[in-house]
Length: 391
Image 1 (cartoon, rainbow, N blue to C red):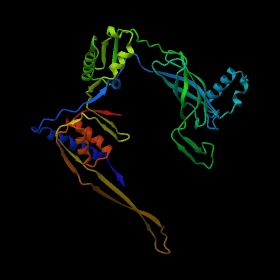
Image 2: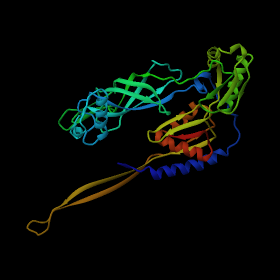
Image 3: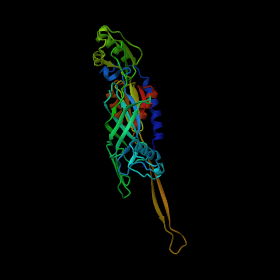
Image 4: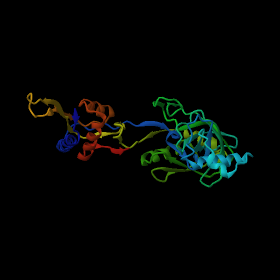
């Protein structure tokens, strides 16, 4: 059976736009209730400016693979890196023999990690190891000592240790035979838990700061104003101001000079009401739809249906008469049947809760992928009061 969704989707969109525009003109009815707000801690929605992690990157080698590393005939820089590493540890290699090296238990990798704020020399961090050649698997490999640098080119950590890839590959590509393979997860990317040691610190000193800035994870004027008000009420002697929709600036009172940790510990546990933007996140590739709690609808009528076209071909045989000069031929007989599911129309009154929105749309029996088209049509018709975010 072949399903044709393109033309039907256009019909559904056109019907939704017309019906929603008509329903949008309906007046009267009770006033919608105010949307509920969530009380959250400051530490969950904001962070201090300048207190952040830093990305690190390095180039290294993974050794100890079971013939699943880079092919030396294709990836020359892996062989060159291996020779350079051996020379650093005192093994002299004749450059003329470079082309004769056929080590397939080595893979060139990029090592990445995050240097957290306030990390000190000797702290341990996790690193991610990713193959950059044609290695088939990093299973069982060990990352040799790899310097990790920051954007300024300075070395901030050294990484080394056995890899954990959380999967495997077996068969003809993983050392087996028979021309078959089996794979679980992604065998060319792994992690080294606590595999890097911090060798250089990023200086962050807030001890004697006279002003601090809080940065909201998501910009919102209402939340920023409430955060500034909560700081004014809970910290005596300070002055707090919402500079914009994302930044709140407050002064450090005299009583907290040199005690920034105690001050911020008090502020980050404040509870404030978060005023989130009405937003719907759509991922059409996976059919995922996430609807926020503040999504509201105007009165709207929704029609949903589906058109199926079934094409069947039966093969017949045309047999000539005996002793004739004809030939036996196969004749295809095609039949086409079109069926349309019974269309459902639903009138949804003004809804202010996510529960009502989801219950109303689920009553149509739509799939998540169809729901993407319906929500887009509602938005175009002016009946859906929310921001649509496409992933």
